[in-house]
Length: 234
Image 1: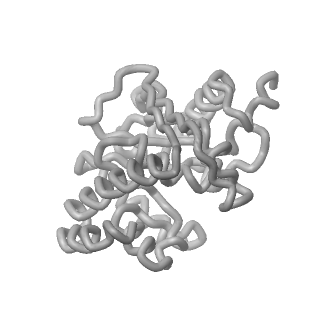
Image 2: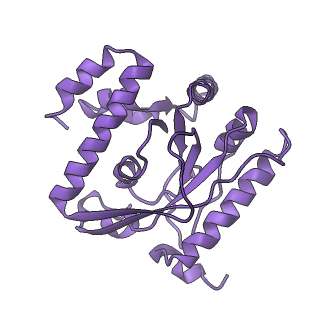
Image 3: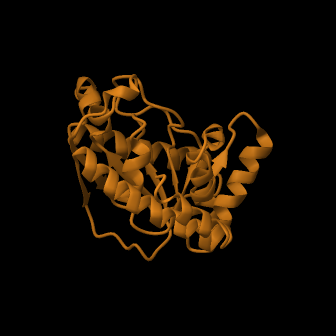
């Protein structure tokens, strides 16, 4: 990251759109190199063909700090993650974070409104966005925590399809309870079939949210997510 930092600085001068796209591409390069150096073997699979020329609202399960690396390893098109504003204050990383992400302070209504406006603006410019709808780590034995409404409200208001992705091995590669638990091994991301918002009314946020949650819940069990195995019969 330090080696790439001067290039991030140059991209920041190009403005939020071009500079942000450049920052995301550099994050992909960094993720490729970092995973290879520490012995993580990543594979991205697709249940159905994926069209990277279209904008989507990507959503994924969240169970580890390493998910931040897995997402830029898995998504190979221009996009912006929605991320917590607190991390933007960190040295070096914070600068990259601010340029590559849409930051939000969930405790501040004005920050939440501004982040939603930014997400909509990006989608209008054919840039995808990424959201962890659980908001925070899932630290239980259920496949997923409950979802926040934000991603699904934006999907309905912009007419953008939801594209769920499963991160299956973050729990094993870096457990959420210990930053020092990083281990080499496999990493898998599975693209599920997109969920069109056609057929949902503008006020049916809860139905869309619950439908996406149910699909991801079932698929995590089907693919044998380690933390979800105790829930397989429920």
